[in-house]
Image (tube, rainbow, N blue to C red):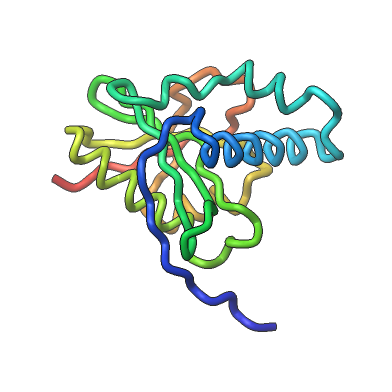
Length: 165
């Protein structure tokens, strides 16, 4: 088995309704629905999940949405909600074909840099037990489990990372 080669990642802001961002968000929600139910997605489920948890607040000044490109192709995304004193990471996603090539780490580093530039000293997130790869990524990058800070019905693990000054 060969190790996937790293790619050149570029990351930039986008509105969640822009074409590349919208496609990545739909793929993110499709994977979340499929993995949660442990079965193929049924008609309407992705649209319902997207309506239940909209991404329209991931725009300045309340937040931001990032699209990651691997060698120029849209390959991942992440969102950040800016709250008083902290920020919440959400919608971190890397397309399956690009996983294991540094995209998650690149997105985390960029989100953290932008959060710090916005005056934020900590990032929090919640995730589910079945998203083992995500939990491992967060732990590798200094996120530690904390007590629940939200009541999201799908949240089973809560993480936080203090950002250096």
